[in-house]
Length: 506
Image (cartoon, rainbow, N blue to C red; front, side, top):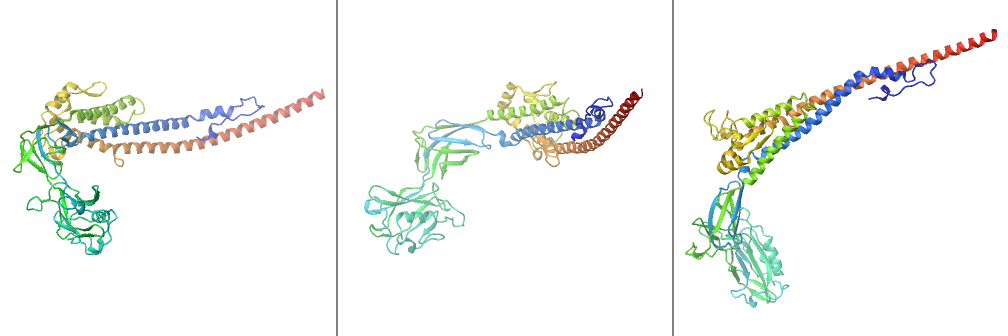
């Protein structure tokens, strides 16, 4: 607002006898329209702020709904092992609650080879870490998962000349830098090489990065083997030709629910659907003729259960967010949301979604609903006065124990699952409603906010125009009363002069 329309205007020592703030008093009578514009704009600004806060609360509710939308959100599980020193496990959404027994006979190992003869005597190692290969006659080749690397490489390796002048550490680096590929060209984990010192000699150690046996299609075989052509000629330690398979590759072997299971890794996610097993130690079972013998073994019990605590927490978060939206509308119904139909429409649509029954997967008729197809049948209660909702904890606990999958379906059934024309799950219905409201481009909130801003912009123009008019009125009044004051002053002066002249005649 321009100060010229409201600034104090006064005349000192008025000859006319009129009030010194006459212009200000007259201007107040002119400002009714300006005040009306300013009040309307302030109300719209408050409404816009309230609407933004309302959208934020609705967006938060939408995020809680999203947590309940997918079947995976309804399938968290707790897993307990009777002996965590020997077996631990984690469960994903595909797991199925139940109890299982395991006997572990053997753990998977990483195939390991050490430079040296069968006895690993000092004469089969390198006596100094700085001892290097002399000349270019040395050869060193090994196979990993059926592919040869080194001086006789099928795909990637190094030449005999590359070995000249290299120490064991240099050779280990060369092996670690090889690009390992299967026969079909796909990348593989490869071999980790290092140097160890046993107190009398330095030795090159090759370890398969992946555990268990390699199966090229004709049966399990070791992942690593060192070719017969290996011959490393060291300047001081002589020629070394032998490698010792100190840790032979083997697969983990365990009995699960009475069935023998083999795994190349001690972590396996294929034995039980949705469950990852981490084998840590054997249970006393042995391997007899390739099968698990449980004689003398202590069984491990693995229990998988639905994680109802997490689901209840998700439901509670949904209820709290829902109530926050409803309460916000209730609290502002007579205030800044007065006349905002979007607020009332939102609450109505939310309430309708709660009360709409959900159809079964593959519904074949309009009445083909879930056995318990509305939240009220799972203990949801609605306050008739406030519209706030809450779960009857006893009824909900009972439902989670007796009809866990039914409650999950009520929320998570998709439109594709129930079929065209039938009611999808509550989470999908609410999501569709919220998407139509909160979309930043086409949403109802965007349209409503844009409409409010347009009206505020128009009021800004009205306010500017009215300020301009008032400024002109102020200038006119100021000029008028200045002229009046000047005229009265002149008349007073003339009157005084005449009085003085008359007094002299007498």
